[in-house]
Image (cartoon, rainbow, N blue to C red; front, side, top):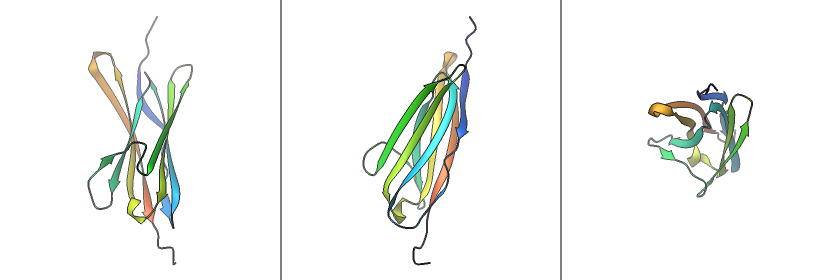
Length: 120
């Protein structure tokens, strides 16, 4: 039996979002890999710094895993709950998987919330 390994490959990238008021914003990333990838989300606010995100405190993260014939597909959704102007910035989804011999493969996608002036 031949063991086939594949680093994470971004299949669906999150899309930028123009925010006009208070609303939920959903970003989706989809990766394929073998073995299964672990997906994390990081927020880079407009004023600098970064925060690794987890469900709770204004965010909800969910994932779905589907096993295909050759790959494992992971779809991860980040919901920014009741997003407002202060949530503007970059949101990065990052997928990693470990393969034998301690090699780590990484792939990522990025989207941004743009706060718009609702009076225009």
